Image 1: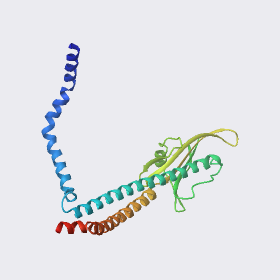
Image 2: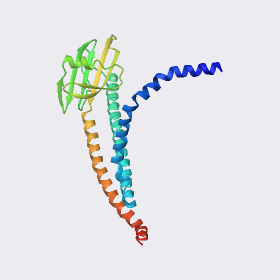
Image 3: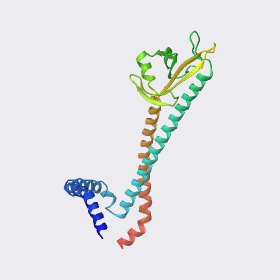
Image 4: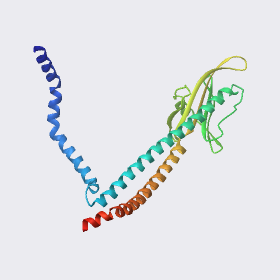
Length: 243
């Protein structure tokens, strides 16, 4: 018994501050909970009052709206992930092509540059050989400050999303390796390739807008159809009630 009494005393001593805090804050917490309950009751009052026909129509329309919104959100998220994975695959292909084929060396040349919108940075033995941004067939030279920011991306080849001031959000892949030059001399090389994500999010936003419009139309059509079906189904019951 003394051991049990000691255990009870220990538990009471450890949890007394918690219980005291809850009891002290209870008067301040209750009004907020009461306000939330009142808000929920006020918003969902139409679903719990009125005739049986009205409640069935409103509840069915609410369920359809909730399902449509959930499906739209899930579809948008899945689509954005698929598109982002496609961007990552294109970056991986660019990296593989760069390291497989001849690249820039002192006195050499560049091959397999990006043919679409994107950026490309090549550094050989710490010397910047190429730093260009491709956009609609035109090349824009990147300044040293921007190149230094791009080099902060881990050089492991894994895609990373960063924000470039003045150019928005980009998906980048940075990889550094030691390669042997034509004279069998080890050369430290870095390759940074990137694709803007602006088009990806623009497309996703357009899809979300279209889904929202279609959801409103579907909910409206559902409400009309359910109204007709429920009223026709409950007509004998209504006639019986009137009788």
